[in-house]
Image (spheres, rainbow, N blue to C red):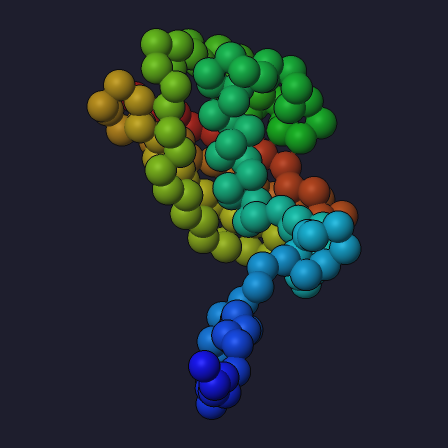
Length: 143
């Protein structure tokens, strides 16, 4: 029998084609994705947010009012230490903070907290000592 040659060449596995927009995965060193944009140090939030968290920690017993010495005046500290800690049963959640600038370096702020399905309010006055450190000079707790 005569041999005939075929027009077909032997089949070679087709190379995989990448679709446009498809990614291969991480391509950095050791198979990690390349580092993104580096961020600088975390800036603190507004002073009323920071102080609301401090006061909340003191009211829940996670921090003692004495931890705020040097950051709060005597009347604000006295009010904080004589206030019965009302939030011992449930961990309160800080809901909102608001502040109004009433003068240069003076803020009057309020915060609302939720605990046990009830909403509580705190009002406080903050004064900038001139070095960027805010000091609590007045404090009122609403039930």
